[in-house]
Length: 279
Image 1 (cartoon, rainbow, N blue to C red):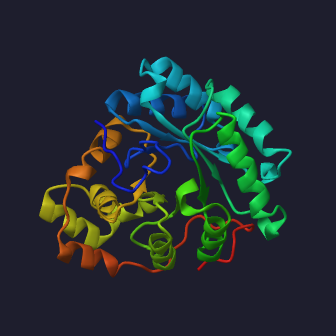
Image 2: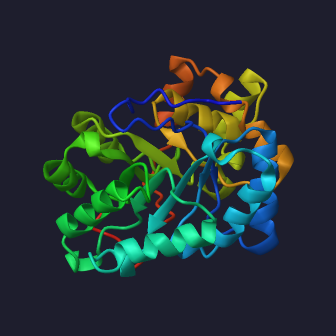
């Protein structure tokens, strides 16, 4: 099963499947089992990060899966303490050691440097160097605001940036960021697409799900996929992982999309004290 993103990606030459498997908050045996079952079911896009503390387990699961490495799109993210020119590449090399890989497919700036302590140009230059060294095949952003996306594109061009990974779900539709990213030609990846399970109890989502004979989770994923985003739901249960893989086949109509649009309430779930000033 290879649900390839319809987002324009020819500029970076990396086929990132639109539906990936997130590993946020998954540790130890739990993440090993989740990644192994995901790969067995057909996921070919695995998302991790330095701060998750699970790169070694993700790497172990991939190595033991029997799926050839070149068939799996792997993303990791550089933590805020390693955004400087002298720390970024060594930190990425350490991530690769843990992941048991020569290179990842995508490396993101996990969060903009708090207080702009490290200039964005310095970090982007280091990421481009990492790509030139063959440590990563593509680079991108995460949790970047409209102004920060514009700054990044002004510095290196949209064609250099594979995505901006941001929180998007029915209760936080992040419309300013979505509109700005589209105007800049920058692809978006939606994390927390199920809002920590809250979509599964939302009456509107349940009603739309009943109409289509599916789950509220699939409705949320399909809603995001139909807007051209990639999505990386986290799931540890094989049954839920398998069910999520059905989302790309679900087509919501205009009335469904309009009803989901009314659910936006600005409910942000990822908002650490060092987060940027959100749009």
